[in-house]
Figure 1 (cartoon, helix red, strand yellow):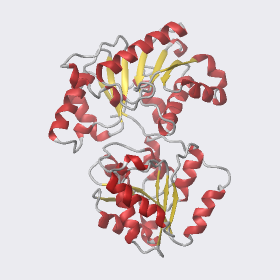
Figure 2 (cartoon, rainbow, N blue to C red):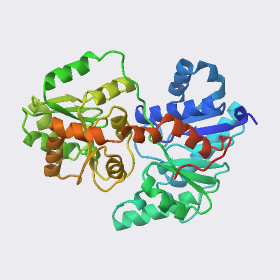
Figure 3 (cartoon, rainbow, N blue to C red):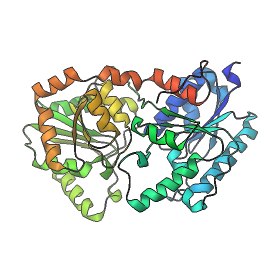
Figure 4 (cartoon, one colour):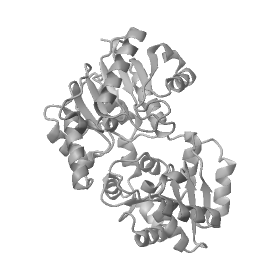
Length: 410
């Protein structure tokens, strides 16, 4: 039976431009190339449809878009629990009626949001009339996890979520969580999901990137690129920068930065650091919306700082590190550390340990040491799994589109 008869809903409750938008485009490309009809539910469907018009115009009639989000207009608080499931159910039914297409399967691209707040339902499961699968970003219970009360709440949320009617299985960006999830999902599949990223680079080096290389001179460039917040280890990195020899080290801090997201005592430290305009730092406090420009900033770095705090799952930046063959420094104890050790991608340090961070930066700033690490790193093996080809197979299997209906990798 031709897959054009298959109708898939891509539901993105936590829409943001940037990583989430790029992820939507990657998923949509796979499904359209498999000849599916796709209903897009997100906060900016027109933006997605314009992308289809621009990049895959021959598939435009196979895509229908409608508004769906986890927030009410003008409010910052999220809709959670049964209310979010009810909103999704209504959105799917309205989209079916408006498009005239009957939905075969729903894909929750940030499934964690549909888990939050379910403990308040007092054990009642969401009512959802469609077969569904989801991508579970942060299965905390399989890792170090939160404090005891938070852990209990998370376990209740997860239990209700995984028993919701129509669940066909779950994808996870952390292979270390697969056994835990299989024990909670008997008879259903758990897929290890590849962390695929955009790999494009400009044909010529942009002037802004060339300037960074010129400013650094012979110094090693250590970069933190992407969202600049507390969870990404920004405060620890700044402390290290202030104590390291400026003549030997150069740093790139580039990405979206929101001062109000930090507590007042940290705001003062951050503002003082920014105002100091330290000579060995190039700081860009703006959202980088062009994925090719983003990749240019990653590529200009010699090493990448990924000492994220309580970051349990994968990161697209780790895939970019493999694509552009950049050694990394990551926090111990989580998925990224296991991958870094397993594939020899760089060094691991305790999260928040400024002294250890300084030592790792110093180690990777040594050209001979960095060259030895690069020679042993299994970048190609890492890229082979976190690739478009793997995404094509795993997403197809989750949505029952593959001819062989083979098992997803786990």
